[in-house]
Length: 330
Ligand code: ADE
Ligand code: ZN
Image (tube, rainbow, N blue to C red; front, side, top):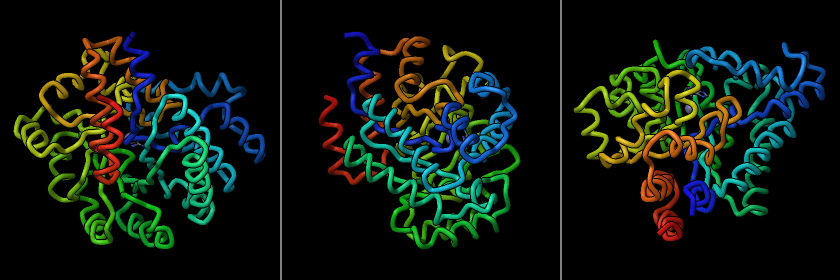
């Protein structure tokens, strides 16, 4: 069996996916027309052609603008449902989905609009596809910590359906320490904690995410390799890293996938996972990320299986459910 067939057949979890980053150019075009919004593009092809990025910020500018077509509950349902349909095609059986409330509340669109849309799609995905899903509410780090506190407060009616709190957006200049207090409160409320760190930012940001935010997982984390002590700590404690290969390539974190460190991190024993981040902006959903790695690096069947096992092991699923999924991989 070819590696791509093995990848297709393996049940997998996805742990680093921004729902706003799964908006296809087709849905963006459709929603813009539905709401009479004028996009700075003349066609669907022109939208796709605009996705040429030089760094994280050049992507974020387009990503936040794209999310402007999401207006009513049905739009958020359609966004989430389209992602679940791709999950079903890729045999993703569990997914932990990030959403950025501030991207919407800043436009006057509140939790009572996007949450019902998300939750309805999640219920339907469980029923129709057997896909389980969790929600990770992410704070935008380019905004002040007071904004994150206001977001945590606004989310109160939905605490029971949110599993984790995360930190994303422009990393450089916005270290985890800026959010120490709000994450202390989120942890006290019982949320799991994740944070983007070591994507563009230095290893010190990963240390801060671990020491000050008490994260359960690091999103990206690929720059941990620049600090031997940090690598050893992450390995010894099996802190999961949710790595996103095509994202790293598209945002110029690496200039060639053949130089990506995911395989050497995996061989050293770190708890690394493969994820798609913002699939419609970076040129591939989950299986595309696995396949791109196989094309660029000496990935074996054993590696692929280990990555699939890790995807469940690093999830926030209860231990018995993790083990049930992992049992299907051996
Ligand atoms: N928001 C969406 N994708 C992101 C990424 N790769 N890094 C930081 N913030 C993001
Ligand atoms: Zn991300």
